Image 1 (cartoon, rainbow, N blue to C red):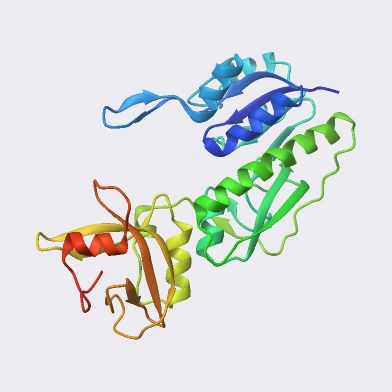
Image 2 (cartoon, helix red, strand yellow):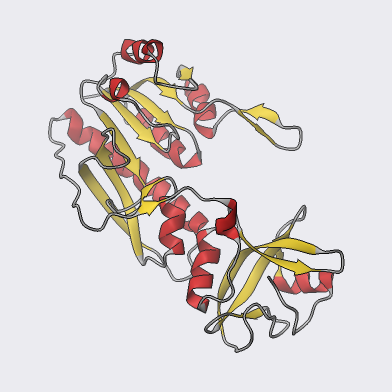
Length: 310
């Protein structure tokens, strides 16, 4: 049985789920997404990836700045949805919205709840060195990712997998999980299990200061930090190329061998000493330039062994 669905999502991560829901024959009666944001050199207003996909399907799009007014609640109720599906929408849903659909609001969350509730579960899992994560379908409550869980799919995090790699894997896995959950829901067979009280962690929103590499930490922690922030926003170090300190993003790295004062370039192959051990930088990016191998980077800045990175 097909369902009347309101879909709520914003970034690339949410697009496959919207596409799969439409492809499975459900009636998506409305799409809610964040308002167009300024982007690019011209800072022109650009619709979200979900907005763009909804336009392709001819689905009405709503971009309210808030859902906490009676008018917003009335508009939402007018869609007559059986269920709302929420995937990285970027806005908290008030009680009036959560209670509007007859079958509630289902959220696709990119972690194994209750670990990594919150805004940046993919990045935080990699940064913490987790070896496993996944996607979960939960019924939404007023609390932050506290609702009971219906279905889960797990995935291993490889030793050199970065957040971008994991993001792409989870968004496909999550789309499949959500349509399976909707199929079960339409048959009245979707059960929910309360989250355990133990093991709760929070994936706090990333801040600018989170991106600075701390070379005094062990090499494994530095490596996890780098891959957890790659490709965006990008972990960075500071270096002096003769015109003052400049930020350099590290997009790819691996564990290396070497000893030295933390933050010291040990050889031309990109080995940087850490508090314990070393990492090898593979791909970096200077401000305003494209990604390059570390070899190319060294040729452009004329640095050599013994250089210090902050």
